[in-house]
Image 1 (tube, rainbow, N blue to C red):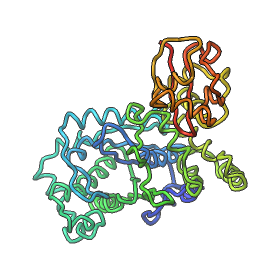
Image 2 (cartoon, rainbow, N blue to C red):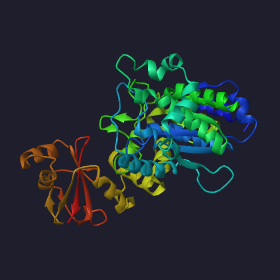
Image 3 (cartoon, rainbow, N blue to C red):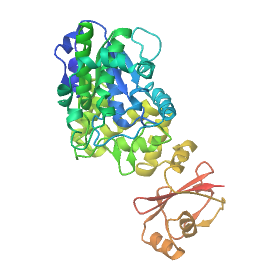
Image 4 (tube, rainbow, N blue to C red):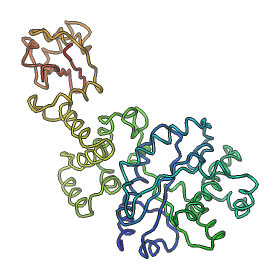
Length: 418
């Protein structure tokens, strides 16, 4: 526990902290919370950073609370937003909350024990709060001029900020006060855009309870190339496998820029400092092997989707981009590929001409185009270069069901026996 805060700093979790936080952590087991507003049906990979932060704190002996914003989600947090969020119906918020709650269990431990995590919903106290009492008991401790100096508010003054979103800071501060009173929670963590909201809660507890509370924030992650972390050409990377498949999730991590891989290993794995530094040392001398990206991608995919899914997508990735042993590939791997590349169902015809197969699979518009591609040496069957004499035979149907076709470096199709 003594070195926990230093380890969090080394991993890149600490951008700002309240004075005395390190001593507060060292002096005993604490209860710490982080809030998540269920304004989407799934969490994104950006949410994995605060969840990993809670997980590291739990492993250090502290009790985490995942606070789902069933109440604040009805309002919308202006922090980090350039415009007002659309207000979602209560039933949508409730559905999103349940789905996100299940995802947090992949990161932190809810099994009964000394530091077992809790999941709470702030709708329990916010929806029931009476306006006049709230303004008298909470609002009187906030001055408008101080609130206007908070970065989350200042950034929105020119584009416009409704009173609804302006009040968000009071609601989040009240959350902290409520958790302090009911669960002896003395710490709040979040992204750097939450610093103003967190310190507002710290001040409220000091004013109302004459008690000590703390908070710290992690920097918002960005890639070395300047792109927003967790965004791809296809859009956001979600934790829900129905929204981002485990294969696509794995590809997001395996394609990590060499300049980012060290910081990602620190944040998104539980590897020790010595293990990370040794891995990064090997990566520095042989970056082409992409060992660091492989470890990162396998670790995160297993954490979010489970070991079985991780094994399948790693094998599927190797089929497309690495060594391919048709005898060592399970049928589940081709089930993964069938969701990711063009797939057609064909009658299992022993002796199908390769040119015909390319046309059926959509890799060529005509038999003439298919023959030219084959003659130029750019067509592969199960990753083996084929010539014009090649036909699709029984020996090519892996597991009796699947044949992988490739034209050029990146055009794939899968034949499945119907």
